[in-house]
Length: 130
Image (cartoon, rainbow, N blue to C red; front, side, top):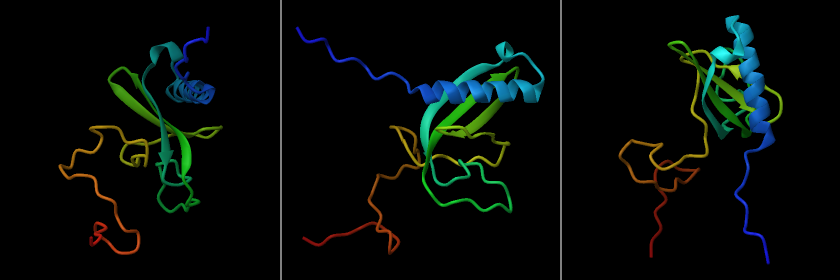
């Protein structure tokens, strides 16, 4: 008989990027990695090569960039890393982080407005006449 379909497994890149970010944070804080708790590891698409963490005065390639948003906690402090899906990992300072473009799950946008397609040329919703 055919085997039942298997559930997708997390990408190895996610584990690799989380481990790199954890090692960097431990070194930055001067503490043992076991004193740091992984709070969130989410695959995302960043709006550009800044990985959602643009530094003032810098310019970045305007290309969608797949990666991860990784949050750690140590003591009472939370630390957020933004990564690509290959090698780059950035500890994003408070106040500089921008949200990823996708994926957006149910409940991620809480502005009270329904989703509507937007015409990229003219602002506002696309309206089609019957």
